[in-house]
Image (cartoon, rainbow, N blue to C red):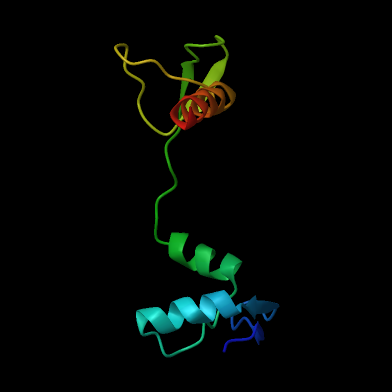
Amino acid sequence: MFEDKTLVCKDCGEEFVFTAREQEFYESKGFVNEPQRCKACRDKRKNAGRAPREMHEAVCAACGGVATVPFVPRDDRPVYCSECFAKMKEQENAQAAE
């Protein structure tokens, strides 16, 4: 029913693909207009009004390295660096699959 379409972004002028799957999604939501911007320009436009996140440094509770996080660390809760956090999530997912 749907076929991929190549569209041109009205902001940057680059071509992008409006996939058949995206077209199905648009139809299911009742959208009648095709997207006018590529993903990068949509994201840039969406984030333009947002203030940048304030980042905070903390010590990783697992490896002792520096962790940069978008929240104020508290003494009563552990903070993990990105690598240790990802490892913990992997382990949790593996345990849940068992």
